[in-house]
Length: 241
Image (cartoon, rainbow, N blue to C red):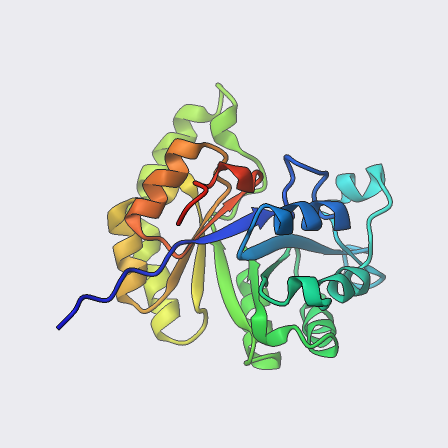
């Protein structure tokens, strides 16, 4: 019997291609497409913290205040064009409260079947599973809003937390996969080891790694066989697969 070739790791542009063009914009999405991505990740935020108002493509309220972000419907119309027919979407929800509105917009544009919705908010995952069972879900870990590894004062504690999370998170994530609550895990690169990936894969889940902007680390993760790698610069992927 011949061996089945391993599936190529999916190449995912963070906010489109944030290091080529400003993220969460049509220009950034087009830059990711030109760089040959398989999937584009982008952020959706409601205009108001209670989940009401316009749905904006922005990572946080500070980013939304600095520029005039496009609305979700405009972004989805762009992705529904023929040019993006072979590209999947990772819609990252920043806060709870507007999950069903996002699912409805994806359905209206005919994009639900090729979308993965990811979030750090467990509440949102439960809401989406009940309201939109046809949409695949990814649980983002760890639940942090800042890169504590980047600050000398917080780095030692952050490193200790990473060692703890590498052991504590996989059983919880694998349980959620086996229970049908999620299909995928979106993990920060610092968490991902062969053992972490094995726990997710053995449970039948997918593993997407964020946000990797070093070619050497991208090559390591591709060799490990993770499902996908999210980067700000898709040009870092090797030219041949």
